[in-house]
Image (cartoon, rainbow over all chains, first blue to last red; front, side):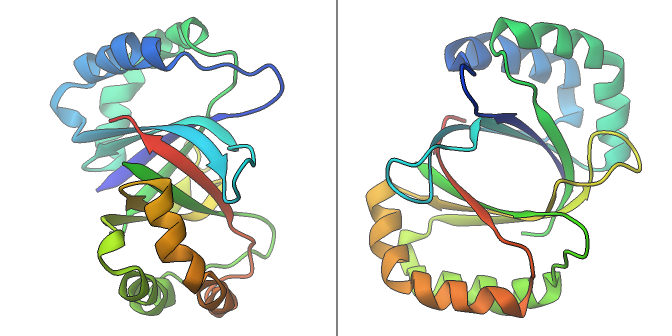
Length: 103
Length: 103
């Protein structure tokens, strides 16, 4: 199992509309990826390790697939449409990482 | 539900011993946190979004708790012991974020 993490960095004047994200963007992605997408986790940044410290990411999304190929085959043809929706909910530039799920 | 993400940045000469981490560190953390820890996810970085690109994190760990208080009360008294074990599996400095689980 692999995980595609989409991390939305925090920063000055950076915004993230979690309502739009949960109500429009995630359903768009889920609908297009279909059964290739095994699971999706969405987190909203609260803080760093210490109380009152800034979260480094406004939000994180983790998408689970059976393999890198399953991700590429399902995501690739839709990447343009997914990216075109990003300005509708944030002005930050997401960072993407592909990981192998160990636990 | 909240998630404490511990992110281990990649970089020149940065190393991460996943075997030690899975066999020693994670069981240490699980044992000390007990029932306060609802779930733990561990990922090993493979790449960035594109093939052949570098993963920004060598590894990520996500620890789930019922609340920030449940995290602080269980993690706080053990933080020193957990941190003392870090040099046994990596030479990178982890970044911590607390998030609210939305999905």
